[in-house]
Amino acid sequence: MSDYRPKPITLYDVADRSGVSYQTVSRVINGHPHVSKTTRQRVLQAIAELDYRPNRAAQSLVTRRSFTLGVVTFGAGFYGPLQMVGNVAHAAKTCGYNLLVANINDSLADTVQDAIETFSGKLVDGIIMITPVTSITSAELHASCGDTPFVQIAAPRGANEASVIIDQRYGASLAVQHLIGLGHTQISEISGPLNWFDAAARHEGWRDTLHAAGLQAPPNSSVEGDWTAAGGYAAAIRMLDEGANFTALFVGNDQMALGVLRALREHGLRVPQDVSVVGFDDIPEAAFYEPPLTTIQQDFSTLGRQSVEYLVELIDKPDTLTSGQQRVLYPRFIERHSTAAPR
Image (cartoon, rainbow, N blue to C red):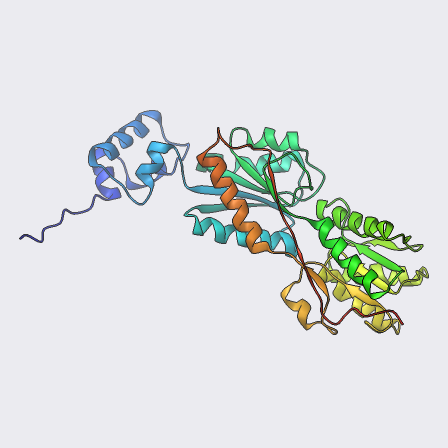
């Protein structure tokens, strides 16, 4: 019996057959726009004649799929969006997709449009949109993406869009219910920037949970922060200087809570003996704060996986799935040592 095995067809064989460089063959396979129609046809014919199948290249040519996803993200310098991008990348790889990332400095419609256009020559099969602020409308997103399917992360609860979210209002309610259960009746808040969907939902959850318990928010009880430790520190100092009277603080994220702990300490207030503090996110460092921080945990791994799986479903079955469906995940309450009953 012969051990002879045919030599696999290579990119160079296709280049030789079609009379072009191997770089040109690569550009045709990857959908690069700067290839003439005649050259493209010649390369495609050579690929067909040689039955050239490098990884998914032949399949891509037949199905017009690149097995590449795009991600447009705003706020990647903050913990939440950074975790979203990282977990989307991991999920995309697991599903056999490459990933292209466009990080934008604002989420205005023109900026998002420009980011999406950077994908146009690369034949992305779908787009993950991480645009968690109010400055772009649903209609503008649809206009920017055109026929390319997309899934939003960090969209508002109840949005009539293909989206995967973590219920922020529910998480805030868990935090406030915990404080009420300890006996606190004067519960103030340092929110995130309220033009962010998640910050606004957490703020509403704080306010509505107080009202549902028959409690009124104390005077000067809510100050808007900026997601950073420095912003949390400044917001807490402002609240204390204005004479806000509280025994507990719900803080819009764990980074701001770190600044809050310092501000309280500088004012001679002990946590949790004098003031209880609850954060949001459960960043890895939260367990090592002094005291360890009670917080709300978001499952960014599941968020990334479900968003990619949802997008792949829309790519595979564009005519059978309802594009306006929102999928909702729920956060978990994590109790540590920064909360206690009021004295």
